[in-house]
Image (tube, rainbow, N blue to C red):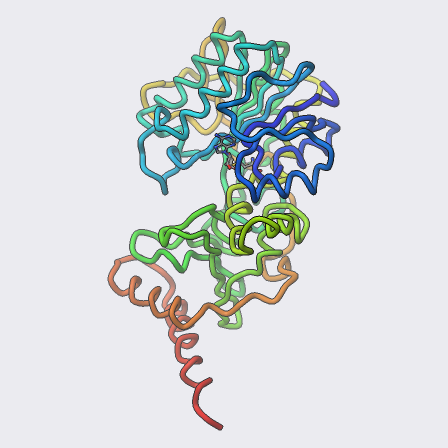
Amino acid sequence: MTNLRTSALFAGIGGVELGLASSGHKAEFFCEFEPGAQAVLRERFPGVPLHGDVRTLQALPKGTELVTAGFPCQDLSQAGETRGISGERSGLVGEVFRLLRQSDVPHLLLENVPFMLQLDQGKAMRIIATALESMGYRWAYRVLDSRAFGLPQRRQRVFLFASKVCDPSQLLFQEDEGAPEDGDHKSEGGKACGFYWTEGVRGLGWAIDAVPTLKGGSTIGIPSPPAIWFPDGRIAKPDLRDAERLQGFRAGWTRPAESVARATHRWKLVGNAVSVPAARWVGKCITRKPRSLRGLPLPFDQYRSWPSSAFGSAEEGRFEVLASKWPKRVQGPSLEEFLNYPPEPLSLRAVTGFIERLSRGNLRYPEEFLRALKNHQESFAKEVVPA
Ligand SMILES: C[S@@+](CC[C@H](N)C(=O)[O-])C[C@H]1O[C@@H](n2cnc3c(N)ncnc32)[C@H](O)[C@@H]1O
């Protein structure tokens, strides 16, 4: 399947479509209702028609061969309320099904947070799989980690490919390098560590030689970047342009959003996006010659969390696949080497609040980390001492 004519729903800033374009799949239509994201799409994909609200979209453009849809995950993601798939916003996946039912689109690519697999004891996934099967799609999905593609960002997302003409299970699982053994636990020595300074009570988002998942929102209600503890003791936040690069975009990709929104809004757009190299990998997979699965597919209990990789169809049923989140192991630069722009030191207020939350919670972290935070806090006092 080459050069699929693509209609992108919930297109955001076009992470999926940018990745797919490397394999010749061309975005010919966008649906996205947020003005900042729209401004980015208009500038970065000039001439591609753009519709606003999916709920007012009458039909998909004729000739669409692939629909992409990273439907909003607020209701699904752990950070959001757990209202489930029938919540008002995630109910928007229903709009995708409405549009697909009216047309005869051969292929579909859905993207979402892995929490979707756990939600309501598999209910979200049962609804999605049942809807797809009733329309004659075979489907397969796999959780992918952005680090597998050389990005120093720990980010896991579910990619589900469905097709009426081919067997997606013969496409998505051909490659598997497996997660590195030292994965999340390799020693911190000499490596920058990412964390969420807005957290500190329930979790830290601790990531070694990587930033934690860039997010569209935060516990303090506004989009905010993570922070990094550098090996030389600095505590600082990455520049927005590096955040764009940590998602696989070029620096400045979201700048057009500033024509309609505040600069800080770009953090939200970046945090909501799909890592471009992960989408690029999926784009390549779907252009491959199908190859049948090695190993036996495993039946699984659909009334519990779903596995991190699976496939199914109305005829054959639903099966787990033992595939890792690391189809590749692209060796990228370390987090510190990756950053191109000077990071901004974490403010006194931010570090003070974070230390205070850490002291209330009972999280585990390296002792030197707390020392580094306190040194950072004290450095502000030193700054104001007159010479
Ligand atoms: C998770 S993001 C998708 C990100 C995208 N894949 C990317 O790489 O940037 C979901 C997007 O759906 C958009 N959205 C939410 N409700 C919508 C609606 N009713 N109609 C169109 N777009 C909507 C949001 O503005 C957001 O950009």
